[in-house]
Image 1: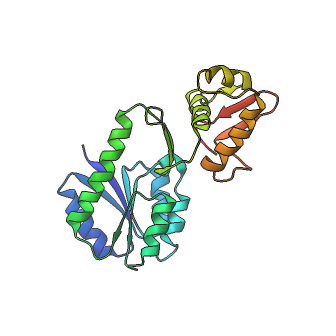
Image 2: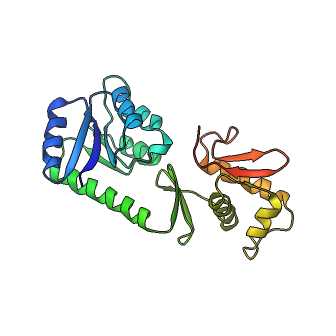
Image 3: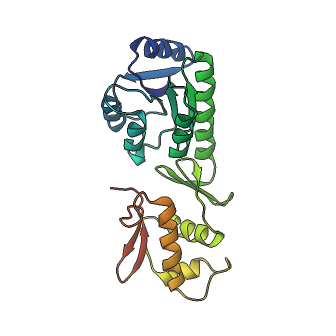
Length: 228
C-alpha cells in the first residue's frame, strides 16, 4: 500500500527529485510550492508524514508548522538551507520529529522518513491514547505533546489518564477521586482544581482558554476528544 507523503518545498527541481526517488520505495509524494498551498492540502487530505522546507516564498516554515491542524497529527521532517543550529533547536522544540540541512542525500531522507514512520506504527500498535498531537502512554507513565515529554507529577499524570479515558464525558471531582484511589490521592477534592490548572499549563496552547481540558461549571471537567 503506498504511503502518502506531503512535501512543502518551493524548489521545483529538488521536489521532483525527491518525489521520483521516494516513489521507487513505495511512497506517493504530493508537492506544494507554498506554505498556504501545503496547509490547504493538509486540510483536504490525509498524509502519513510531512517534509517541510523552512524557507518558503509566502510564509516561514515555522509558521506553517504552527498552523498545522492538531487533528492532522503529522510527523514532520524539517529542511533548511540556512545551516543555522538555532533553526534545528527551534524546530525540535516546536515538536518537529527530525531535521535535515540542505544539501542532503536522498538516501538519508529516506532513512529518516522510514524511522519516523516506524515510530508512528509502534504507537498505533501499543496501548497509547492519542488525541491529535497529544499522546498518553499509561504503561510508560508518559504524556507527550508534539513528541515532547510533558512535565507532570505522578498525580497529575493519573488525573490526565482518568480524564482522557473518559474523553467526551463530564467527570465530577468525586468521580475523579474515586478513579484515583490507590494513587496517593490528596485529601481535599479542591486539590483536583489546582492540578488540572497545572496540567493545562503543559498541554494547552492557551491555558486561560482551554480547548482540550474544559471546566463544566457546577459539574466538573470534560476532556474534549477534538479541539475547535
